[in-house]
Image (cartoon, rainbow, N blue to C red; front, side, top):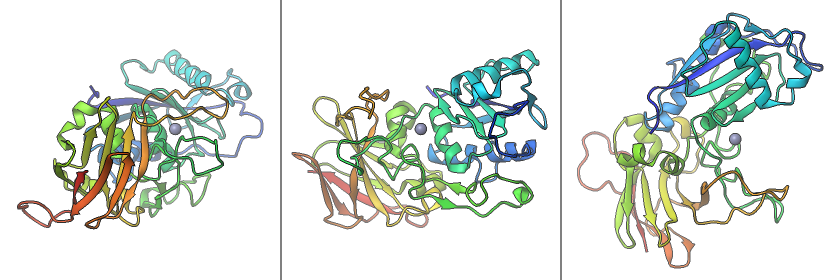
Length: 350
Ligand SMILES: [Zn+2]
């Protein structure tokens, strides 16, 4: 079960002396750190994840360490610059020694300054610095929440990797379908070391990834179907906006247990960069991921795998495997609905 709220402690700290080659970087005001992660402002990491999970994952960030962050004096910044997990441990231990309660949280983030660092996630923990930007934080906090990378057919050199190859999930590559939000007034005077990039925000989490990771919690939004049965799904970003429990993900379970899923992505809210609108198909447990470039197997277990898209028009179809084709049979909302009709497609596996 997902904890509610999902509590994450952020401890700020500064390396003293800083690591060799570090950037010049004044510490962000604590109010800005809170706005970025916790603010009810529409653009915070918390608000992003509330929308992406239909309100299921309610992050609560506590920001500790004071205005400049904890003085990490005595810790060798050059040593920790390349060691993510060790750096997280060191900041947590220093926080505990300074009397900060670091226990009882579901996740932990060390936000260190100056950049750069070996920034990224380590299970339900992460190391961040002020070279981060919204979409980077959104993806890495996704790991803290338990989400694995999205996979898909490799688009690079033959034999290369399948990880991240999904333009329709925040847990894929960073950048596709993203957009820049206007700099909020409360941040106008804050220096973000990557000017112009900090306000890049990402597309939604694929509904298939939410279903894969939190199936019980997400079940009210899932329509399980069998072959030749028609179902409808509503544009997922629209449903997140409406706050309604309408079906957003059709799920077909194949003999043997693998699943094929379909959701409807329309260009609004976090998906405003998703053009054109598309019915997006994923599989879970169907594909062989291959090996990493270093020859080792992936850590991920049955991650979502991008299968392709269909245009939202009657007759569009996509064959996923022999004997399993997804077809759009209507774009009309079935039955009656109070208020403006949300975007919808009726689908059938044939
Ligand atoms: Zn990642």
